[in-house]
Length: 358
Image (cartoon, rainbow, N blue to C red; front, side, top):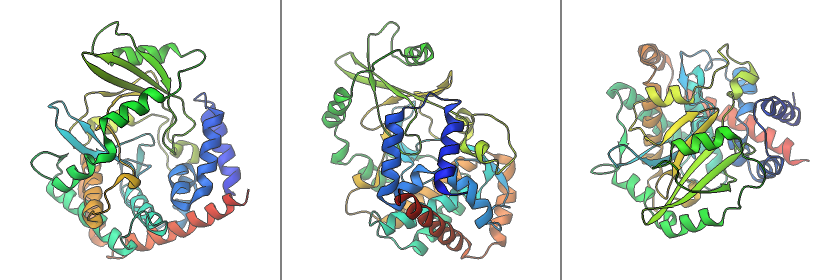
């Protein structure tokens, strides 16, 4: 099946679950033409079609509740219940029972494509080594959240750089267009429950964000409260693209809350799934970190090591699978991840070139 046909079928399937926004889908399709990295970020559904065929020796690895749509821009920061700044995996829209290798190969492919587009400078082999070392160390240690207080100063510098300035952030929030038309009652209920006090008045805004999730409705509740601004977001959730692709036999279930609850994680108390919506707090330091916002001086091998270790934090939530994963890793050669990443990067780039022709 060609990429255009796959995209049409997937979006038709998703539209049966979610009222998609046509103008946002058009933006997504345009972004997919720009470069192979953005194409990769936008097309997890295509990944689930092709990777079982391309990486047959990798797809047989032990199963666990995986991130699914893992990539190097799926990391961000939030505040835990103690107010501490925490760094880790940002979104779990596509969480599903998958081979543990899925998340590692996707991270490695995204690093490869980001390097090809000059967004990272680290070489693909070095990126794979850093990811795999971090992942293995994380599994063997039992995991630990990345709390950016006394430790991880270099991650703290990334998370608090000038591009995450509060004045700019709230200016951008205010500039969002107001919602036009009816708002689902389930959205209002979900947002109301996450407000700091009952009956707080807020302004509903429409937000366009993401790539893989672009096309899904997003509503922002912006309010003035106790001397400052606060924001909450509701994003429509649907079944993982894994269900559409049929690559793995699993239930028709949204696993977002499950993977959050079981991961080794300094939990964000302002993130929850309610009534088919993901509801969360937004603030300057509670958001995803894009490669373009990273400081020029950064240790990319350290960053990818941390991404591998954070992936282990998520995977450790499936306790029963860990010993089998460690045994499986021990049987693999040192080059397995680099080889699989190269194969999938080539396939992704080929699909991207086909998409650009339209």
